[in-house]
Length: 443
Ligand SMILES: *Cc1c(COP(=O)(O)O)cnc(C)c1O
Picture (cartoon, helix red, strand yellow):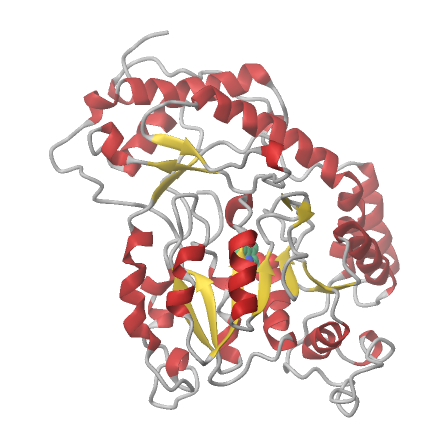
């Protein structure tokens, strides 16, 4: 292989067009199409029969008593916060590096997001949680970021000690395991996106799962109404007077075009994810021991796994590559891939740095909404999340198939850049741009 980096005029490692199936997702067959056509031909979008079946099947697969579908993951997370009774003046702890919808719904309930740091695996740092706890703390939002299961053995005892509720955001890790137990079954309630770009992809859809009857009924009452609700809200006297109107003032039910698709996707999801994991583990095995980049993955012999390996990232240590800035590293890798848009400085930007959490006044109270109902100004604590801003990551290809030839080629591109990093160093580098983005897509 030629040594000269493609970015500097050498020959790229990958020159042919990759096979479309290598990355295409979700996998759609005639069975998916038929399920969708049934909804279209019979105008079933707004009814409930298909959604009810999906909820039953999903709950059985998840291993929870109840499942409630919503129009998207954002809504399911908002309903989860309402379900546990999060309200004005309450604080909820959330990792600062996550997609915004993990926590933006808290403000609608008058609650306050308190951000905690992530660790090198881009995962909520259990050692930083107790710093965030005050008498106002009501809950922890656990996010299994990019499929990596959070350290539940450390997090759950803290929740128990301080009597906090735990919500799991499983949007990146549907079907994943932590030490043999399914993600989304550790906390009081879990919610997740099944949106078109997630590993469980079914158009625009979200779902909430729980074993707690009261939370289940409250989640229903938040964003469902009338025919979708009445027959399920049977035990909560607090809700009985209201259930024919949605208590959240929103219409959050699922579109059956999506639940029809999701029923078919669910049937094949586990086997397709197993193949993704085989492919991704192979890719990372090939990069084992390389300088500058490290795998965000778990050792599967512990019974944990990376679910569908959503939006795969590698940790990036510029100091191991002479301070090479992540954006430059990624540019060089993309050049080796003949422009294929796979490698970017990765991940979501840290939420504590966004103005929405600093000064936005949704209620015209003359006070930022995040702190409007709180007895303290938690924004002062945001400074302590600076270490999370320093943790770099870069995206890697999300292989859907165990195609060794192509996986080896992509790994070779990363390796070539690492081997020749010195040629890319410039004086101004030193990690000036750590990258990241506010939205959830891959480029
Ligand atoms: C995608 C995502 C959501 C929001 O889901 P939508 O279906 O897009 O509303 C919430 N949390 C995380 C971590 C996500 O990645």
